Amino acid sequence: MLRMEIALIIILGFIAYMYYSAERKHTKLHRTFSVLLLVVIVHLVFDAVTIYTVNHLEQVPIAVNDAFHRVFVGTMAGVLYLFYRYIAAVVEEETKKKMIFDWPAKIFLIVLEIIALVFPIAYIQTPNGNYSAGAYVIASYGGVAIYLALCAGILIWNWKQIDPKKKFAIGVALLVEFLVCGLQGAYPTWLISGMGITLMTLSFYLTLENPDILRAELTEQKMSMLYLKSQVNPHFLYNTLDTIRIQAQLNGDKKVADLLMRLVDFFRISVKVDRQMVALDDELELLEAYMDLMCYRYPNLHCEYDIDPDLGGSLVPNFILQPLVENSLLHGLKNKGYRGEVVITAKKEGNAIEILIRDSGSGFTDGRKDIIDEMLLHYDKKQAKLEGNSTGILNVQKRIKLLCGPKYGLSYMENETGGVTARLLLPHEEDAK
Figure (cartoon, one colour):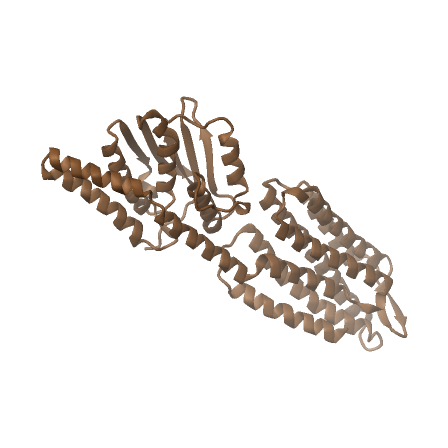
């Protein structure tokens, strides 16, 4: 058994090296797994030590044996609590609901740690090996059962709302741990609790935390951004050029030059930046070039900006404003003959940035807002189609969640006076340049 524990420590040590050295977005979920992985390794070390000490009762003083066993059980309680927190974080991310058992789980962790410190420990010696027993062990493994029941409960309760891959990972992990706990209870000399914890950790790592999978998701989002940039409506280009041609016939060259300059600005800015995050000023420069052209094409269309000057250097995901403004024009103001206004505001909202894109268009059609809200809520379960009105906003939502974290994103509101407001909530991070 000692050799098996050493092998498990080596395996998880290698996984920890791969995990901590990989580039990733530091979300709440990944931070929880980072702590979990570290605590599991510490727990396995003490598991290996207690396997040795309990089978050498004659050589190891009882006080030393007791001390190692108490640390072993204390870290096991911490591991099970972190497993619960990780599973709860996965479910919260999927359902957007706070788990109601968080405080009971924390209180129960404190109770288990007290049990690990004060309950008496007994040792049973058998020809097949020795093991700890008594109220200390019963209470400790009872705690394990309660945490596993909590994990199974939140999984079953939210079953329909969880992504199939995540359901599979959590279900397999819990099934393995239930099986190992049952075998450990039936054959106490086997001392295999560490194997169950290792297999649970591996299940989460291979299916949810694998750096290769996360890198693939990042690559997919980069491709979505490139595709989005390539989807600038060809009719916009052709109609604008035609507007310039007509203007050249009717007026002098100055207006033509001004229009042409804005068109050149738009394409120059849109193709020159290949970074994921850009300064808000750069993003607004692209948007202003686009709106100058649209306002000239439609004289009854107006655009206003109310931007906090302190936010100009704040980093935002690249190419997120123009698709949303274009969406406002096509699905709001187009129905009114492009008569109306678009107002873009940006201000601080606590430790975040709030950007609002308000239009005075025709608003949502019946049931449309519910469809948009559902798509934005479950953005990770939706596939961006090559055609369709929602491709732009879905890609914007996916990239914000990936680059900024799950608590940031895009939402829509209906204006009391008509029209729609798109709300972006982004982290307030300054450009390092």
